[in-house]
Every structure is written in C-alpha cells, then in structure tokens.
Length: 466
Ligand SMILES: Cc1cc2nc3c(=O)[nH]c(=O)nc-3n(C[C@H](O)[C@H](O)[C@H](O)COP(=O)(O)OP(=O)(O)OC[C@H]3O[C@@H](n4cnc5c(N)ncnc54)[C@H](O)[C@@H]3O)c2cc1C
Image: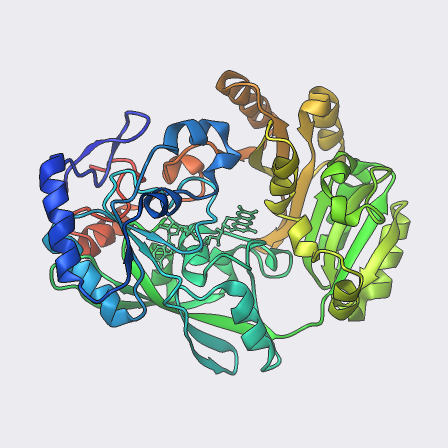
C-alpha cells in the first residue's frame, strides 16, 4: 500500500501516483474491460459526480472544488460491480463509491481521480420479511421506507436527505438521523443486520458481514469494500404526527427536550430550532414566524396529549400537530426537512455567508450553558440541537449555524466550545479520523488491507497507519 499526502499535506493511506499518460491508458483499458456497463465521461458528469455537499464548509469548498472523476460507472447488478472491481484492480485505478452524493465532508470526492462508481441503479428491494428488509445498496431511502410501510413496518432510522440519499451511502457515510430520538445512533441501534461487500481485487470476492463485524464498514467512507447489499432491521410502523411546539426562549426548548427524553413519550424526532432561523423557513411562516423558539418533533399519536401537556409545563404551546395526510393537504414540509442538516441547507439556500459546527453538548445538558453561548456569540451563531438517545441515556447534539469569517475564527470558537465541555466533530475536514466520529482500529486497518490490497478505495481519506 503506497503512502503520500492528502489535501492538507498529511500522510494518508491509499495514495496512488500514476503518471498522467499511464493513467489515460489505464482508463482506456478499464473501459474496454467493462464494455457493456453504463458509464459517463462527459466533462460535466466528471465534475458533478465528483462533488457532494462539502460546500456547506467554505474551507472544504476551497480545498475540494477542483477534483474530477476520470470515468463514472453505473452498475445495475452485483455481477457488474464484480467486473468493475476486477478491472479497476487490474489497472490499479482508484475507486470512489458514490450513492446520492449528499455527504457533507467531501467523503465521495475522488481525490486521486480514477473511477467513481455510482450505485443508484443498484436499487432493488430484494425481500421484505417480518422485522427485516434485504435491499441493494443504491436504493434511495424514501422509496424504501414507502415499500416497507406497505407491510405495516418502518425503518428504524434515516437521514433528513432520505429522498436523495441511498441506503449504502447512509451506512457508509452517515451516523444518526430521524429515528435517533427513539433508537439511538446507527452504530448502537441494531438497525444494520448484515452488509454484503465486493472486495477490490483482481479476482474480487463477496463477503457478508454480520453482528459486530458490520462496524468495519459502517461509517468507513467507502474505504474498505463496495457495499452491494444490506439487511436492515424493521420495526412496527407508527403514523407519526408532525408537531411544532413553540417556547418563550431557546433555553426553554432545551428544558423541554431534556424532559421529553427523560419521559417515556414516544418520539421519533426532536429538533430544537432557534427563532432566528424563521426567515429561512419560508414554507412555514404561518407556524414559525420568529416570535418564538421551536421544537420540531415526530410524535406517536398515542402520546399526543402528554407531549402537549409537557410542553405547556415549560411555558410552551403546540402550534402544529398534524397527520401525514393533513400535512400534505396543508402544503407544509415534512418535519424531517426542518431538522438535522436541513436547517443549514435552508439558511444556505438564502444566504451563502453561513456555515455550521457540529458538537455533542455535555450531559446532563444545561440550558444555562446554551444561554451563555447565545450571549457570547450573539447573531454570529444560531442555535439548533438534535435531542436523541445514546448508550441508554439522553444526547443533545448541536448543529449550530455560524457566520463564516475565516478559519482562524472557526478554530477560536471551536476552542471555546471545547472549554465549555462540548465534544466538537470537525465538519471542515475531509479526513475520517479528524471528523471525530470514528478512529480506525488495528483490526479495521487489517480488514481494509485484506479487502483492498492495492489501496485503491477512496484514497486520501484515512490517515496513514503504521
Ligand atoms: C441537508 C442534509 C441533511 C443531512 N442529514 C443527515 C442526517 O440526518 N443524518 C446523517 O447521518 N447524515 C445526514 N446528512 C449527510 C448525508 O446526507 C447522509 O449521510 C446520507 O445518508 C449519505 O447518503 P448518500 O447516498 O448521499 O451517500 P454519499 O454522499 O454518496 O456517500 C457517503 C459516503 O459513503 C460512501 N459510499 C456510498 N455508497 C457506498 C457503497 N455502496 N459502498 C461503500 N461506500 C459507499 C461514499 O464513498 C462516501 O464516502 C445530511 C446531509 C445533508 C446535505
């Protein structure tokens, strides 16, 4: 496995430095070897398929905007993935797997060019059974959720990007989402029952990981095998109510979030949003107009009254509480598109000066700490927190909106938040370990070397290990 340096000049795994002329020949030979498999080579396609949502970060935008794929392949079956993997290994071409391309950290940017393998045509739902679904990795999450709901079941978790994001992309790039208020983060939820991968070798293998082994591939950013199929756990479906509770202050929202998680009220999403976000919620002006701070929630109809009573006890009131058909009829957005990184997206669509920071607030979460941070940062920072479960306890994660000044100010604020006891996950780096969600263990590195002996998978994203 060769080593070189990444976009920041740090040594990383899997850097390939083939001379340009050899690379052009390799791409040609690769293309001949995969004859009959759909591919794209137009300049626009090579640019667009090398991007994801890294532009949320001006730091990453500057670093990553010029990268390009050299060929995009669109397999429709596992057999085609096996042919692509064999050909890429034979010609020593880097392979970056791409699902819907909604990742925030440039995870799917091909730093060494080469092949971008997009999975969106590998999208078959193979089997829906009691408590589980088997699905190809390129299936988008929203249609998958619709399919399983026809059997009276639902997914345990999905990202707010469910209409574009793929199952494989969520497992390889995501970590938590809508459903974490009930089931915890992906890693601990039991949602991932098995993952089937194709190795990147001249004679590729398929491996099916089950139990704790799924962790090798989960949130590894596509560096250790091409996920082709997954089995996910299902739970009985609930007709969640889309609710907005309004409060006199943001610390009241925090108090309420803490109380909901301490109760047995069944919520699937619990997302606190500062009133100053209201100008970016143009499709919700009649419900969230900037005069109060909000908790957006998906609530089990069984607990509707208890949810409302609890909100009232913190000075709040329920402004909206509708079923899915009522929401659609009223022309309102789904609550999940008011939460997670959709908050940031809403602001960025209207004003490009914003970026964001990700953190976990120390438990037990203290509304006074949030009030102090609001006083410290004023209009430089708008508050948004996801209330979820983690390791059997409550968890409050900040996805705060921040006026971007420069990297120095970003570092300064990060230091202050660390001093507050927050665990900051750096959303402005393109290196897996530095983003703070996963440290590759020796066992995982050994697995990576086993399934990708030439170091071709998504090069540049993992720091060099001994
Ligand atoms: C508005 C917005 C909201 C978001 N909300 C959430 C959220 O609630 N929760 C959350 O966790 N994330 C969230 N994200 C991040 C992202 O949308 C999710 O992680 C999403 O699930 C990624 O899916 P994707 O198909 O777009 O993956 P991509 O962006 O295409 O890929 C993500 C990573 O997975 C790898 N990968 C993709 N498919 C495969 C495969 N088949 N085999 C191996 N590796 C693969 C890629 O190489 C890349 O490293 C959000 C992003 C945005 C822009």
